[in-house]
Image (cartoon, rainbow, N blue to C red; front, side, top):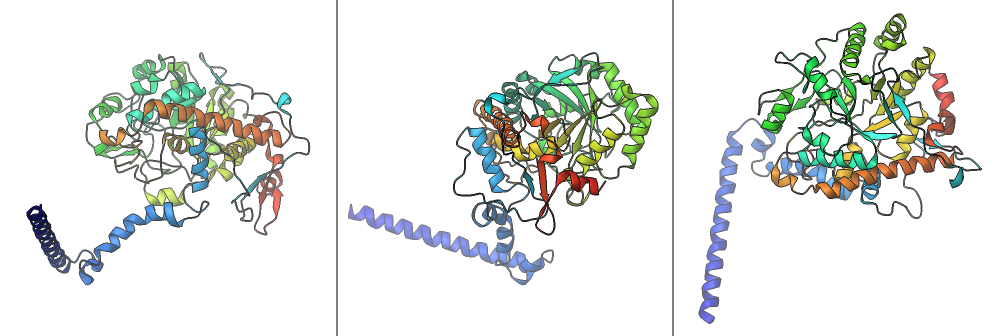
Length: 493
């Protein structure tokens, strides 16, 4: 036994010396490499030690998220918002103790005005169903207020699409395909589907990349597909098409989209066949005629001149030529990959664009004809109720449902390294996303959004959320005092 112990000590000491020597050689090697290179000034001026700067920079996101940032500080979604979604998705207690951590002083803070005589439970009613595309051969009627926004198969993984599809079916909401085409996994759950047509026409393109009426009919033949949405622009990257790195373009995704495998999938920054408001209306009517189903478009609003021109053209042609719906995306919308200049500086946020568009439609007597869908950072009941009060008919969210799937905001959507398996095609990482479990979480999240907006509506004295309007909200101004939302928007019209 004594010999064994001595041999073990001798071996371990030798191993230690070897590792120490190897480490020393590695340091010498890094020193030589650093001092001889001139690409990175920090590494050249501070060999070896300078490398820690990149390590700390890389780990900074992690430490800020879990150790240093307060509950209401993080961007794009703070911990308090994410925590509510996680609790709702897991169906656990969502109540808080002691007091709110939300600061009510900053300008722009919204507050719902409660009524002295809130709506009693027995007086509450379920929001009425709304029909989109009443004049279509196959209109779409739904009572779901909160729905799943566009996320392409490719941008998100197979198990993520499957869980969203099945969860949407349980929740009774619709699911948007995103611009990547219709996959078998979208149809698997038998949920209502909105098929999105991006600038590259993925899934409905011919061999030349143009819109194929034959493929449109094929997509429309699925009873699950309820509507078609032309994506004109997206909040996180207005003026830029979809971007899917080649490492995420698998053989199956390439087949669905009609593109080469393992090559970057970069959509054009605009529709080549839609260069004017007339072209847009022509395309809407073409797709509606071919499919028989409601057709609308998605856009992030900036300049409103084109929209006024569009409304003028609708008046000339008649209300039947109008889109059946418009999805208004916010400048603070999300995506898997986008250039920072576009993500940070282009387009109007929803708090400006939504009331502007709604007011213009009301002035032209088109608000009943054209339904409004609001999109962009609306992941909690208060934000959803706010959008409905401003005139939206429906709300859609992608990132809220990603949180329901387990997203931790690791900000690696574009790298195929998502640690939760949502935005990666790495089979090992996908194993952590249990479809059955996440299906129920998606359904739970949707359920408690609707429950939460009902709570807000009843506290304001109305029987359901669709009765909320701008008179039920006040907004904090620069002097720290609030003003009625209806007065604020009347002032800036």
